[in-house]
Image (cartoon, rainbow, N blue to C red):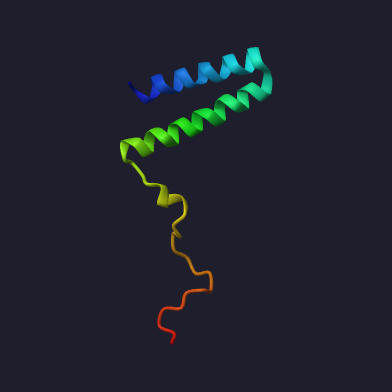
Length: 68
């Protein structure tokens, strides 16, 4: 399924939720959609859970390499 079709389906789902359920339903559907997206990417093997917890570099002053 193309990304455009997936976007269309997601937009229609959010539109129906917003129209029939109000703003709270819109937010709930959007949040559950995001959770489903992350779970799907994890199951496909596109990323691992450590990506959320791993440091991505940068200097925070606590780098002790070279110090004894």
